Image (cartoon, rainbow, N blue to C red; front, side, top):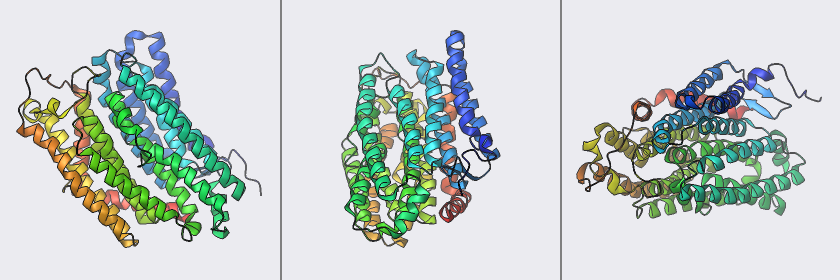
Length: 484
């Protein structure tokens, strides 16, 4: 029986995407026809994000558009992660853009449209829908990275991401084409039926898997596909770097989870799991090892991000309801702590062409107590110290890996996580134990950035102390995800 392409309720199914798309157009037009209203575009973007969050509750679960678009509990969890990242990025960007003299509705419109791309990736049951969402997201990222047009480093970051991103998308499309050649479908549900009886020794499947993982490895900044990340994060406007380090990775992870679950019968008979484990181990070792020698805060956070994706990939080695829930929890916590850390760095009032180094935050704990405390909490959480959300999310991932038999990879993750404590606590040492050099500018932050940092800190501590509600929500959503 042929499914209709437009099922009943399809319009309400994409209500969040419609609100974000229309909101972006509204901000663009507002800036074009009323240049004096640039100052309200930031708060208006936050209102649009909040309205979209409310609209998520109105969307009915189901599969739409001819079996290519799924709305479920787990997609709602990831949608809320994207919206949280967008709200924090918009709040931190408000004063940063005003200080740099580049505030405009187009910046926030690109954040809104990038979130639409991520929602399409998370909900896509067809690889073509996933690629379409990925390209919408990528175009927004290209422009946001080069948004500070007067800065050579910003233009360089945009060009590097554009060139590398084009190659990565090519790998994903080639992998998709080969999987289509083998399974005669790009629909993940149909591909799962093929993989249930597929010949695991078929070299076409292995080549397709390697190509797909190469493309998605770039988007995740997994080692050895990571070299772009430190340069791009360093050159990007700091609030953009924080958003880029979190939200696109969360969207890519849910896509990978769908694919790996569909491929499970073949993966059990091949060395694909070993490939994933190798990428995870390389990312954890390289990310943490190189982060130790970084004095530039943005580059340190970039290498730290490579290591954190390595931790998240541990949960991908065996797809189960526990591993999906662990990834969902990790991405939410990672959004709070990483965007919070980048947000404090964005308040450093200095020439954005120059590196933001450890010396710039020396004595910050006493010069700006709340900002110093916020950055310290983010560092404690990133290092995985209790009672923060970072400890809970890492514990969840490592426990999942050990229970599924990947004890060796989990032990490497625990050891590298212990190593990471050194460079995270070094930041706290500079905050409270070092005198600020003469002439160091005092960080500038207003009500929006302070509010965003407060959300991050409170969220990190609440999840760390009372993790059960989030665990239950993610666990129930993951169980429903695997039943489809």
